[in-house]
Image (tube, rainbow, N blue to C red):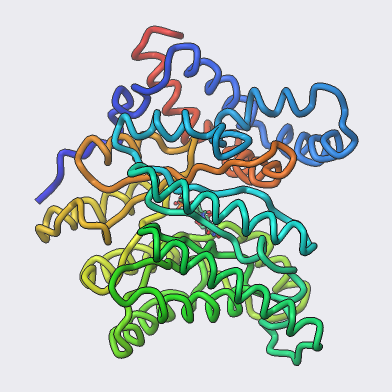
Length: 392
Ligand SMILES: Cc1cc2nc3c(=O)[nH]c(=O)nc-3n(C[C@H](O)[C@H](O)[C@H](O)COP(=O)(O)OP(=O)(O)OC[C@H]3O[C@@H](n4cnc5c(N)ncnc54)[C@H](O)[C@@H]3O)c2cc1C
């Protein structure tokens, strides 16, 4: 049985945007479509932010930040959250500070995540807070632990602090009825992240799914890991939270593997990733009592596959274990059409000071730029809607 879902219904997709919002999005995606411009602007933007070149922050704020972020602070994001909720789109709150390497920054991230959990507990529209383990401890520590090297006394203390931070976040989320997503990162830290997250799932996911790990299915070993984690959870009496993504660091992963002459952890081609991703979706949906699934993807085919499967198998569309999610500012055709058909769907809403979220904005710009000169997916959808509204 097929659903009524139509991801080409751009009227529903962009109903929340005024004509001037749509024009602004068109200008931005047209610029980002030029890969040479994105490649040039990314390092220049970072340098200008560091050197406090006048107007840089303002210009970023009025363009990319406005498109892809909720606000500079939690309070400043409330309007975005409320706007999404008007269309029954939930928010997954993500404090976007990245790339810091000192204790003060880790404590700041912890405090911000805790504050976000408290806020989420008071808002039906915010079921989840997202965190990145590299925002709570130094990369070198995560990498050394990943290589299973012996940690120095000082490193052991730092590792203990990381465990405490994570425990504090998960216990607060558990106590207040919120869930916690742990983002997936580079493969040379991911074993550490997996170990820590599985320990949290074993402790906190007995009655309800509090903690979700991220499975980066572009890795050829991750479908098997997902299946064995689910089996282990079933044996030991806890549920798995599985955020399924394809993965964001493909080029970096491949380059490093080549440089250091080890086998790349990434599948050889996109077809293999797509096949594993879709299998993972169905595998989790078939076990939805024991696995809470989040299809975190902008791929229309994968989203449709899961949406149709839910209807075909008569699974409860609104079950808290069956979720879809896209990034703020992207793939509104998926988000708002899924919401209009009664699925659980959310946006990842990143917030934080402009300078801190800039690396995240660069990743979004690169994702939307075209190497081949084709019109990007987002730009083409915006053009359809502009035509429908007689704006061009
Ligand atoms: C809500 C949300 C949360 C996310 N959280 C994370 C996270 O925690 N960690 C993380 O790493 N990413 C995360 N991502 C990003 C995600 O991993 C993808 O980079 C991005 O969503 C693009 O994949 P897609 O499924 O949307 O669709 P598509 O556009 O169909 O797929 C593009 C992806 O396919 C893979 N790919 C493309 N070409 C090839 C090739 N030749 N060989 C092998 N693989 C290829 C890459 O992963 C690429 O990003 C998140 C995305 C969303 C929507």
